[in-house]
Image (cartoon, rainbow, N blue to C red):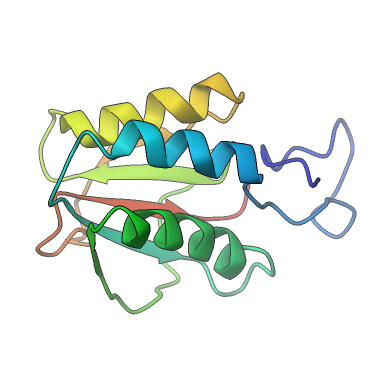
Amino acid sequence: MADSSGSGGPGSSAAERSPRRLSTHQKAVLIQVLLTFPDETVGVRYLPSVSDTLNYADDFSTIFKAINWTVVPGETVGDLPCSSSGLVILVRNEKLPPSAEALRDVLRIYGIEAQVARDSSNLCGSATFALVVTEP
């Protein structure tokens, strides 16, 4: 299975890195934990210029849809916040919603650190929060 953290080790470039994907086990754990937060609305954005971001974003969208969350369709944009892991949880204000906090905590179990940032560009739209997949 591909290294879902997106880190290919010291000195590795994006071209050498395995595409980021969630394992079946990671998906199952995310579903189990996030089911406790019904009726959420979430945005999923990705950086189209990076080859693995669409599939990785689709992994998360599939999970969110499987638990009956509303996934707000949004255009991909090039001006996205960056993080070392390539995952950012955007929130409208300083407080992290409980569902986003649970998502962040589950990802941490697998060594995936999603940066939390305030949404200054309105990428959340009508969503409670947005998950942004960018280049690590």
